[in-house]
Length: 456
Ligand code: PGU
Image 1: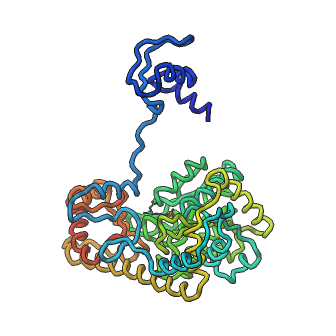
Image 2: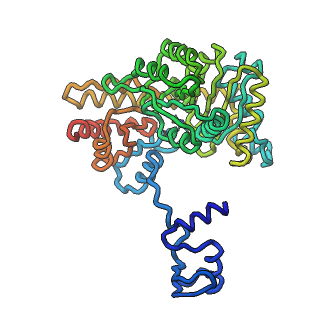
């Protein structure tokens, strides 16, 4: 720390004083209040020092986040027509945030029980870790029965991915992670931050607005043996295009042939199809082959627990012994970063999944949410097809699943959506249908048609 602060000072354009020199300056003239000191001499150093020039002068402004930055821009827009389709967060038909009834019930139960706020163990709440792995793999899955899964509670999907990235960096030095092109924007940040090299595999074919399956297979084959292959378990973000079960089998074949390690990101279990089991089919197919794999989970979307930061990293190992060692190392990575995870969301999940009545209520509510999204998807398609007289085929919108639609709009067209129509979306052409209401579909269709045909 000290050395990095010193180097910060020495690279600062405003001063070449050492940390202790600066301290002497400040103490001599009585603190930080004075704006400037003319020339002063304090032993070794004689120079003019601008005291109100920050020690952080060398730090440049970071660009806004491509996804979360869209919400900031949306909040600043005062136009009544504005529509936020940037972030993947569920809204009601009235475009309001939604707290699931089953979550409120679980929270009431927790209050009644008067649960304490003691620290959790580093690996998180045991009851949560048990149910989250069961939800993912199925309670009777041999990997669970045989204790082959190392599960550690993480700070939602992002934090769980980050733990896994740190594990890869530490124990597979030089190993590459292959990510889909395109993918969720934060994947690249996560691996960059963890200093894990990554490259892309082909995934989306703009010509068919579908999966480039052959490209994907070829790129996975061409990757250095023992690479990590990052796969979206369901509802691929941003394209909304998932492989079929037959295609998943072929993907698993190639990964096995090349001794790669599959690494699933499951952020939408239950949200793609409305069924928790169907949406976990890809992960279970790989586990059934006896493969070792990593799976990051998130409860942001399917339980609407965005701000509770609740998720998990699961590492399926070929033995329970290896799983115990992996878990111990995941804990070792977590401890200096955040010590131990928050308890509230973990208790909510554990209470809901562990109680048959609440679990059923959750599934019903999730079906409702997934159903509302399917409804606006259909209405958007209908509106586009009715209004657009050019003959363009918009049916790809119906083929995509999950929260998003990948419209194929380019950056200028997406800019037009925002600047002219006040429709906020990411610049890759993705819109979150979870932020759309039936009432706004016609307006959105007008905006898309205008942007598609009138902006190049
Ligand atoms: N993985 C994928 C594929 C995601 O889409 C997201 C969320 C996450 C992981 C992480 O979500 P957690 O809340 O950390 O569990 N993507 C959303 C949310 C906004 C964001 O970028 O974080 C999105 O709009 O793409």
